[in-house]
Length: 105
Image (cartoon, rainbow, N blue to C red; front, side, top):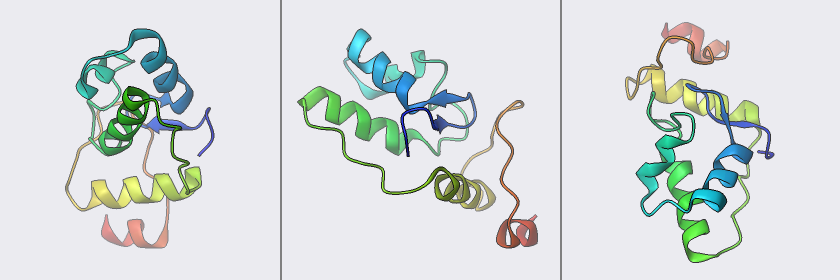
């Protein structure tokens, strides 16, 4: 994923916005990232990524590369939601159309 790709599809928050929030506001705990446009407070899919970004920022480590495309990220989010793990709020990015997700709806 690139910097301008969305991390939080529920509230349309990009990876760049999250990383800048971490750099500028220096949150003490990962849950404070929710103050960045509501990131992580919708379906919950992005929380693991937000925690990873927080931890890398806290320890000063170079941020690990997200080795997936935005399409793969969106498909994995769709599978997470369709499995009943979260519910996107109104206005969230719709789930992508795929053979697997359309058969589960």
